Length: 562
Image (cartoon, helix red, strand yellow):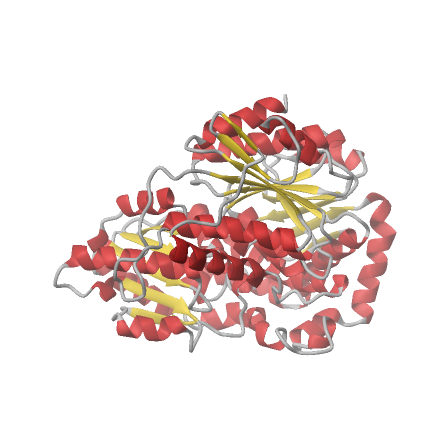
């Protein structure tokens, strides 16, 4: 099967699933899936329009944004001319991931602000970022669709207080802009604080579908990206040929999942860093519900075919002329695994990839008979985290838990009877069945060292147990894979990692006065809240508290697998 637009090549090698996929594509044509999608027909997914008809603005976002290119570029030039040399986007999930991909892929044009993204409540991460900024020459971007995302508003309160101290008589609000929906609480907050600009996004665009809206393009303009080229590359996907590409990819994803191949491993060109994280959120949060879902697995180093079960399929996203994963993919194809290959002409096709995957996700939702635009299980962890914070404020500490094991600074919490952390890990994973997956949830400071250790642990677990393994930093993953963890068929085994923070930072309250809540408290509440939400959903969870040396604890667990 081969489908091409002007710059996009889509190839699929389906093996035993070819006839099944062809039948599903025929059904999609008979049911006029793409024409009904363009017509905003909610009955593609559910009989009621709730949380569907008001979430389809992404379909023509690129066309609308083309009309605003000059405005956005003029704003970016104004910020550059006013002397801003750095920019910090504060957001979570759909409000930050597209920006992260764009920044990592294209870099920063000379003379424009060097933009970074903050989406971790780990106090070390917050303080490290604060220490890297010149507060008086930094533009802060508060990015949240709802306007009440707790992490984003915590970042805002923290940095607004710091800028207020650093800027003296100069109004701190002049260093801040917002991207949000009309009528969100952030609109009024921004006006009260004198924000330099408040960008109001189309409210009919859901957060994870917002890459080609103001949420993605305002930051892109600020780093000097050629917006017109990015958007022009999207146009081939808005016609009939492009519709077919998105429809085919969506049918492939949905039908393979129905056939039991519900774990999608992504191998992505190093020239498109961060794209896998964006796809992961889009797919996981959109499809993981009603006992069904597609688990995205970000692959860095392909394993031998024998390490993958018959619940896997593979997607490679490469640039023209690249052959990095060819040999591994050929081996996987020879072993009978379905393979999907997407090839881009160059990185400027990134915008087209955004729309392609958004369309495919909508079509996969049709095939799975779910609403891909809601997130019914996300709120559970948020409610429990808020309750944890309230309990902390009353008592001055979190409700006590008794570890089942304490050994050389490493504590284990769970329902396993074991004599050591190594045995606890072995017994916990001994529950796994063929169709399970392992989710590593790391509430530790993101760093290259942590990335490397978690990647090694992930690969060792995959090779040892033959299961898909995902890695997510907390609380970031709550806005990405958190929905799937609680909404899929209950196939996950969840391993939390927590630490004793070496340093902490208070979060000012909404009036920017000192508060008893710190980023460490918030992160701990989110870890405890999500663990409780998983357990309430009947999921299996174990927590390893790594003490003050996360690296030492992770290395110990890695050693136990070898």
